[in-house]
Length: 100
Image 1 (spheres, one colour):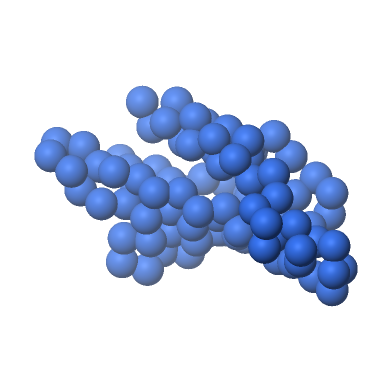
Image 2: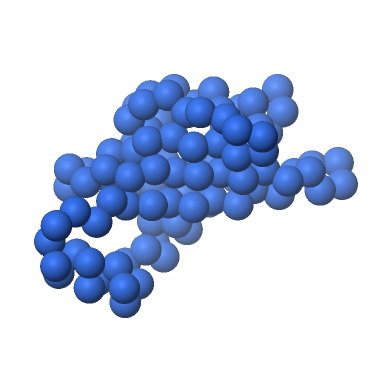
C-alpha cells in the first residue's frame, strides 16, 4: 500500500508515542490524515499526518495536538512549548519504523 493508505489504515489502539494512542478511526482528506488520539493522562487530541510525494518515496509531516481544556496552567505550558519534543520525536520514529 501507499504511505497515505498505510497511515490511514492504522487501527484504533495503535500507539503513536508512549502514552498516546489512536482513539477513533482516521479520516483522510486529500493528502492529510487526521486521527483522534487519547493521552495516558486522560487528555484528548489528534495526530495529523501530511503526506507529500518526494521522488520515489514520500515526505510525511506529523503534527500532534492536545486539547487544552479549562486548566490555566495547561494553557500557559502550551504557550511556552511544554514538553512536546519527546512525544513528537517518538511519534516520528514510530512512523518511520512502521513505514520502512
